[in-house]
Amino acid sequence: IPVVFWDDFNLSNPPNWHKNVEILYCISGKGVLSCNGMERDMIPGHIYCINNGEVHSMVNRAVLHYYCFIVDCNFLAQNKLVFEDLRLETEVYSETVSELFKEIVKDIRQPSRFGPARIRGNLISLMALLYQNHSIPCVKQNALSIQDINSAVKAAVKYIDSNFHQKLTLEDIARSSGFSKFHFARQFKQVTG
Image 1 (tube, rainbow, N blue to C red):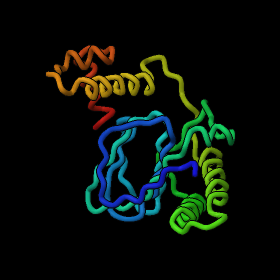
Image 2: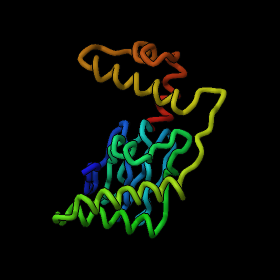
Image 3: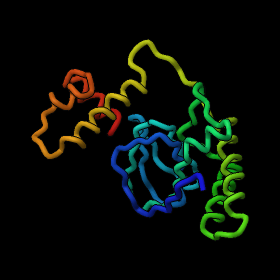
Image 4: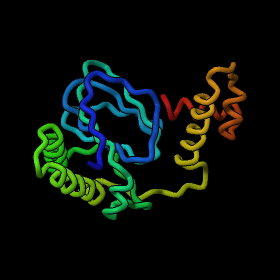
């Protein structure tokens, strides 16, 4: 199936990113989603969308239970659901979207002969509905864009990951991102929280 499914309970995630779209459905509890440096309280019944390439993390404030879909970008492309000029809203409240989400979860948990086809069909409907009703135009900025800052933070995280066995300095890490150490420190804190 074209989606990775997680049924997470009380899991905090460190800052990360990937090339796929991630959709979360908050079931119960309290947590904070940080996406591109913006924090959002997670509310039960709400959907949270993380666009491909966005740096994100999650912190639990109490027991948090949520479902997570990581949707394969190739599946989206094959179904003409890739829009370079749009990005999904971070927080969505829609009964229709929630019901589709729950239908997909049900088909994943209760495999059947027709389950894979239902999952694909409902996933296409879910993503089309999100892009049609819950997306915003990408804004071009003259200053550093969110994507530029995210790319710099990603480069720094890759550098740290590749060199964790050595003594690292802020100057070394900042140099790997292309920023001064002061600017890098501000941007890294803003993105990762």
